[in-house]
Image (cartoon, rainbow, N blue to C red; front, side):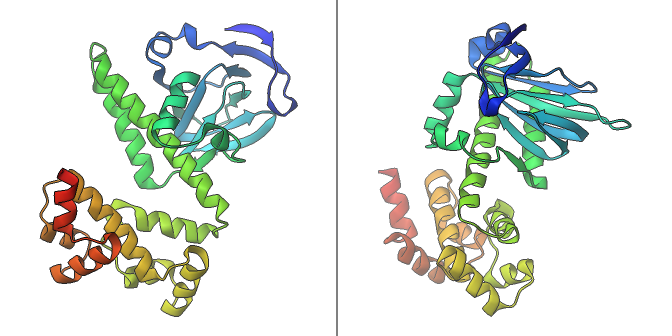
Length: 289
């Protein structure tokens, strides 16, 4: 690291130091790197690469482009090249976080593969996200795997780091897209729950129960914010999931139907044909061809 002054966003001019990706072997050779950070604060610094950090325990003060906030367990942040930041410990509190770094070139490749526009993502007013328990478990489980993979298995470590970063980028991008829709926070959270794999078999009655509103009220909210009824919205996400299962698994149509909460095969076949224009069996045959 070296002391210098460079151009930076939002009139932040002075940096104590800049962290250069070329000084990190994994980052310079593979385009990605991972490490844990804890117990200490940091000096004010910036990077010439992208950085993602997830607070895994405790809390700390975080200064980002002269704005100071408290960060705590379960929060994901994305830092752009030349963002200026530092961590400051809070008296009586500990804090640890996982840190994922990616070079500019490799970050653009990841975004291209996910069909995400980098400039649009970078202009998002809030490049942070409070993770659900399931999302937090995904990231911590993957990070723990990195600890067990031998240093000699560079290909496996590289693949795993790419998976973690891709998931972080996708989560932040989706969060930004949902924010544009002006959903109330409770409604955005409800949609997040509905889209999670563990809720893929839920019914309209389950949605009413989760939201705590009567069916007529929820139907009105869904029409206002999604343009669809609750039943139509559920049908579309279930059928989209069915397409993935038909493409990528050997599950039978009956097994897929039951997995999605449709216990009448004829009913599932009918709604799938309404959605895709073809039967599940014909869809699978066409996919394999």
